[in-house]
Image (tube, rainbow, N blue to C red; front, side, top):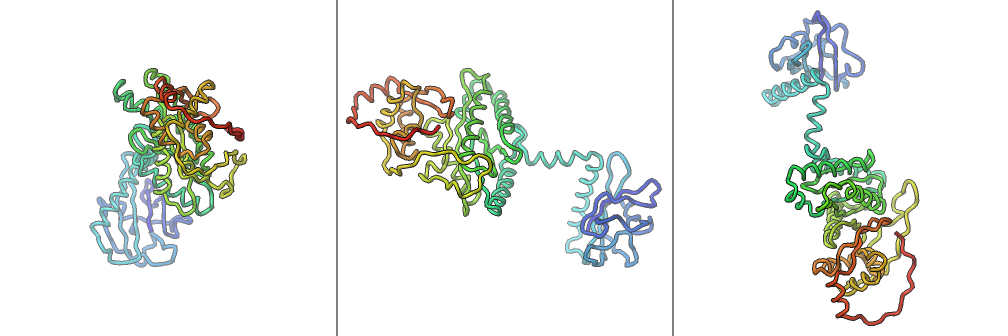
Amino acid sequence: MALLMVPDDGLENVEMLAAWGGAASDGGLPSPVMAGGFVGRALHFERAAVEPIAPDDDSIGKAKSGAEMPLAIAAPVTPLIGPRGVLIAAFSRDPLPDVPAALWLAESYARLASLCLHDRDALDGLLSGSRRDGLTGCLTQTAFLAEFRRELARAERHHRPLSCSFIDLDHFKRVNERYGHLHGSRVLASIAAVLRAGIRDEDTVGRYGGDEFVLSLPDTDEAAAIELSRRLRATITATMINLPHDPIDASIGVAQWHPGSTVQTLLEDADQALLAAKAVGGATTIGASALSGATAPRDAFPRPGPGPRAVRPSTGTASGASVNDVLAVSAQFEQSGGASIELTAWELETELAHVVSAWSHAIEQGLLEPAGTDKASGEEMWRLSDQGRRALTSSPRPEQSPISRPERVP
């Protein structure tokens, strides 16, 4: 058991500030604690020491189990201001296996206790400093993973949904090159503040490295996580108005945990969705279920709040889309503001994963150009470039009968 004690002015009695593992932790020290016992002697120790405890010495008390405590280590607690105290660890076995190590450990804890007595918030600051990134205030990668493992265990235990979002800033290197690294650091700090302000208390945001962030979203399925990610992305783009030549945008990959998955597989799923978002030019959000062609079962978890939103029934087409397919759909919607990758997959009645490669090639070849962001859905819209229009004209498609399709859900 362990005790942290500080004496009164007369050194006749001591106040127990903290206790663990002993009967005293349930209701105070044996009364009175006299200066002649082990505690009284320990108050005068200059450094940590090990001593046997006499059977009739009741200054420490008994363990909760009732076991005798024949041996104790005491280390002085010396705050800068106020009376010195003593940290005591009593043991039910004798001898200790490694006395030098035990003395060093006791003195280390005593120094922490001294810090707490001097400034009660100082230790919290030290502990949080090792968990939080100094620039952004978000959890470090190590701290985030530890928190994420706890959330996954809770989701598994209570059969609750859990999702994560990987966020990568698009072309952030240009910010550092044009405005300098100090300005880049300020941008990162501002974006981190946007992310922290846009999530719930039970959610967690971590800085995964560089300009990458990751969110832990308990009690959130993939559809809700995608909606949240789109709102956060819109807030990021609206906040970074001080970069007119290099507006900040983000690519986001979202994945939902399913029973049997691990932290590693969940993060890998979100990372693959992020890579798909990057492959189509960035500035968009993609869910991992779209890449696999599988839709997360909507009744697998109880969903708080409004019911799940409607989704387009998938045809499960196995064939991939061509660049010409992408250009044809973009031309079809050119007058209405352009097409997104999601709209293209919808019109071609195929899975998003089957459109990603062709869409990416069309952008890389300069056949598509940005047309802004759809206000209703937050999707990045694209239109034919002059080069793309010429390419489509030179490769006529066979005429097709119009297909009657259900109304597209935003």
